[in-house]
Length: 213
Image 1 (cartoon, rainbow, N blue to C red):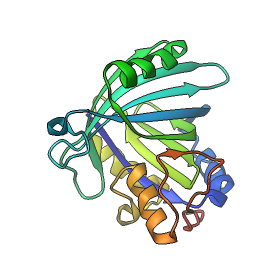
Image 2: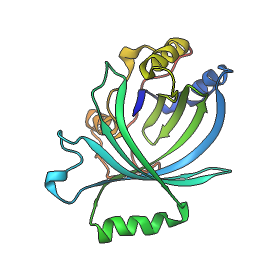
Image 3: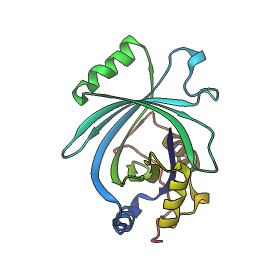
Image 4: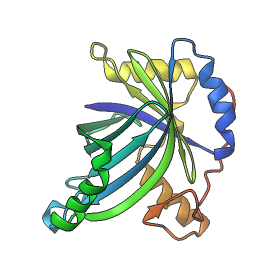
């Protein structure tokens, strides 16, 4: 099970966020990676991943970094959450990143899964044995995600402990996924919702600035 919490900020806050995260010496910087993620839906209506009864995401993600490249097939399903801390079922499978294109062909042309959405982002990773904190750069804004990584401690206690250390207010967290945030911004700013979210397209913007705690 995955336990995490998310906060969204303006793209112009990037330097301030990185400088702030760098002050926490108990966190090790793992690097900055480019990711492209494709999200699919089941072709049969009774198994609609996006329905309220299922409320899951099936995705393929390719990650490219200076020293590593990988590709993951992931199933994520929302479970009951406490306040704004997310609890999710997560199942992952790794494949050779060179097989990414062939995998997408099989999913779309053989299994006839529908490509619901695709997005790109840059991800900077900070972690230790208890927590992983990432800064995600989306075409529409930034997201700080705090995720429990401890196998011995209570997951929600780890999250709350790091919320205190970072001086983040849980009430300011966003309790839905990136695509919900993106569509919400599009509606607010009267911009067409794109199926393929890329940095070179017209995008809405998160306006909230990050200030040093």
